[in-house]
Figure 1 (cartoon, one colour):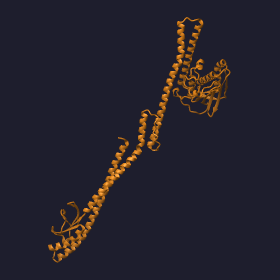
Figure 2 (cartoon, helix red, strand yellow; figure 1 turned 90 degrees about the vertical axis):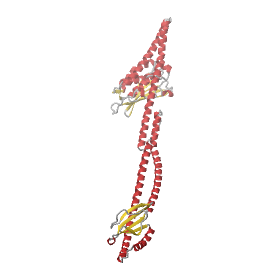
Figure 3 (cartoon, rainbow, N blue to C red; figure 1 turned 120 degrees about the vertical axis):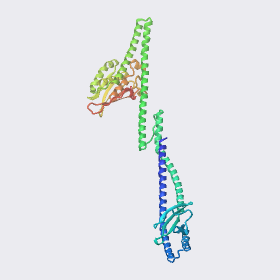
Figure 4 (cartoon, rainbow, N blue to C red; figure 1 turned 180 degrees about the vertical axis):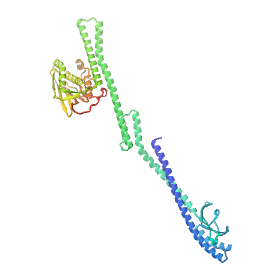
Length: 485
């Protein structure tokens, strides 16, 4: 049974019981008050009749004329008048009726005394108020009985009860309809929450209740939607992580297949064929090239693993010294490729891990040099904004198409497959840079224009001496894909 069914039935039963009981008590108390009032009026009227009759009897007794005929004649004058008003009178002397008479089935069951005794008597479908009392002391052997017909009061009460029953039934039906509509409206949000929960259970994580009321149910619905949003977010992250992991495995298998094929093919050639020294040297060189490519791939993978697993050693790092070290490491390659290197940096000091930052900048400069033609210029620039520093590495080389900018930080992605392979690239450098930037709670982004060059900027590096909370870095598998080369 649903919640609103339970509330409806419980409220309906309580209302019917309380309402009907209230109507019954009100009707009963009103009728009782009417009967008591009528009883009091009967006693008053009985007193008037008994006093008048006692006066007339005293006169007859004084003249010694209280014969049965005289008493019957006297009572006839009273009964003829009062019977038109629904009142019967009976006079008894020494227990025997001497005048008047009570209705059939109406008789006194008490011994009359000097004080009037009233009772309600039911007889043959009629109702009477019976008053009995002895006449005053000189006439104490006389008893007067007074019976007033109150059947109309009982009939009126029965008709009123029927009308009240019909009215109560109508009110009950109306109340049940109104209660049903109110409960359906009040509990509709609960039904919506239940339906939304069923959709989420079936895998529709985009389902929301859409309830915006400010009551308790609205608050519950808001928290349910927030919980669903978090569940959907975590599931999206898990699915993205699974896709990234699968792509990583697929790309790594692809990267390893080419050098392994080359090594296997040339090794098979050396083992089976009769080769000249020149051919043997050429085959050996191809084997060495494939082995070097595998070595470079393993080194990049190891660097990624270390960057992910190693905690950042937060230390003040002077950026001018850091750039000097990077330029010194890259200068032999720059000279060999005919590329010029320049840097612009003040005395900024950031918080970070000097070895990780050096690895990141070395990869960025190495990528910039590979993208530059002989005679090209690679520029490194440090800027500050508020409490953070940014490092930009710019080249004036071939650039990256805009549709590829969104993918370059994915592991194994290369903008120019043939050129990168020829230059010994693995497609892991920028993924490693992003991991290091995330570990430093910084961001990395790329802007590029084909034919004009590329700029990669690492921003958000915290300046030393500035109060700032340092949180744990985000693991590589949970990174969002950003733009870069």
